[in-house]
Image (cartoon, rainbow over all chains, first blue to last red; front, side, top):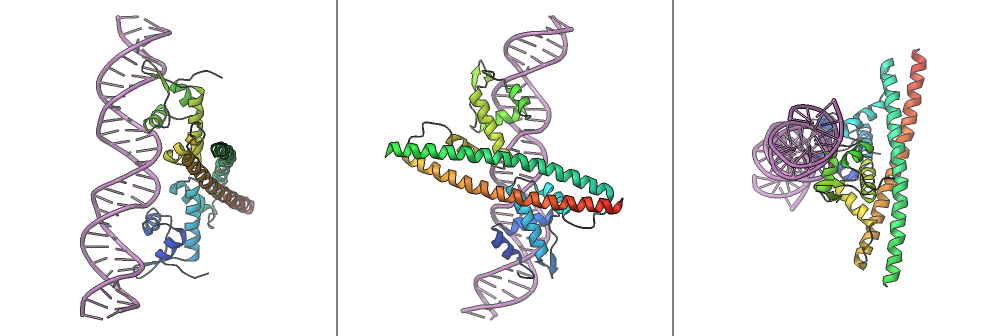
Length: 125
Length: 125
DNA sequence: TATTACGTTTACGTCAACGTAAACTAATTG
DNA sequence: CAATTAGTTTACGTTGACGTAAACGTAATA
């Protein structure tokens, strides 16, 4: 595992544009180090990016992603903060369970659609 | 189960605006009957809407939703069409499995974040 | 009969998440 | 040394998915 990454390395690895990566920085989701004016990404930065993209695949907005990702960060020792976090976690869990339900239903539908298709193909052949 | 629905009934049932429902019609996802110029939705229309919203919760674009929903429709007896459909189904399945994976990982992360929070609360109390 | 509730069309506005182009720098390579 | 290659900033443009306002029709209700 490399100790650092360039912006183009990350863009290739995750198949996104450099524009997107810079955009995530623009809105405060990433804060890579700089060598001169060139961005240098640490493994931790890479992990953050990974989390952002995972969130995206689940339809989570970048704004919401920020909150979730920040949960994993330490130093949130404020008591009210913690309670808010637990609350946010519960909300996310609810949404995810809903998604799970949606997915299983959709997969079932897809299976049916497929067998229907295969049947039709048989008839047609 | 009612034989028909008004636009406001559907908007209340699914907690969306009437604007959204009309928008789905604008882009050809719905095609309700009319009584005079008033829209009248059948149970089948309602099901379509349900599918659209389920797709939305999974981050599926309206455009992609149209394709998926059309899979469930009959009358696609063209052979090439069927092969394309099976292909599309497989693609969807792949994406959904990826989402499943993402969700289980996120749920794990959330669990960890939560126990961390609870621990921190204990220490703080 | 006026107003309230519910429906309609048309059309411009908005917001997130980038795309795209311009104009520049800095390092490597033929 | 000229030309790629990879990076940068600035800033306007675009797309999807609606929001919002205007201007209007129709039917029930106070």
